[in-house]
Length: 182
View 1 (cartoon, rainbow, N blue to C red):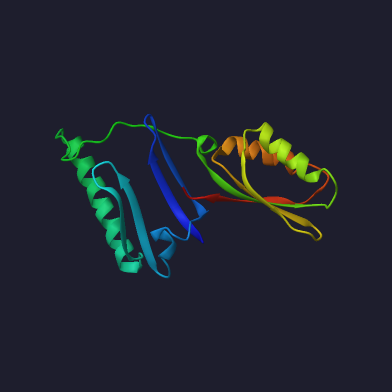
View 2: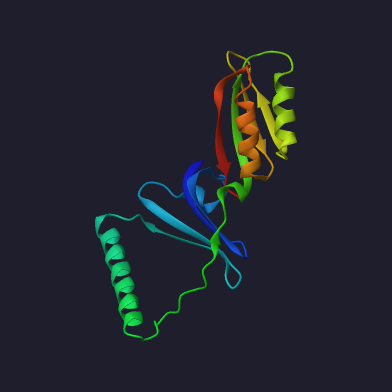
């Protein structure tokens, strides 16, 4: 299933934050979230995996959340301006991890001409950019669809490989990419 995900991970000195559609394994609890429902899946040291599920934000819940956040920001701003410490200290600032440095698995779909050596050239370029193949399926037709599932790869390496592949003469359709949640 493809689900819109917001992902945040503590990476030590950086924080990974990203929002995008992703393939979610059918056996995950998140795969069963549908309609106007939202879920938050949390992996923590103290509790382990847990999921919180409920109604998605509508007009009233969204307004309540925005007003609550505005009141907290105003309170913290006022308290600091008055020289009083905030009730909740701010965490130390950390840099966001660049999207090029995230690692995940990918679903790739190439639309290519049916010619000898095409598959070899595509796989060679992926390998040269440290993108390892987990599964591959090739269909017949015009164009030929080559579907690839990768092992974990660095986003920057994958994007560099795809930029090179999409410039090849035998590529009939731009490569389609979907991240796979892991």
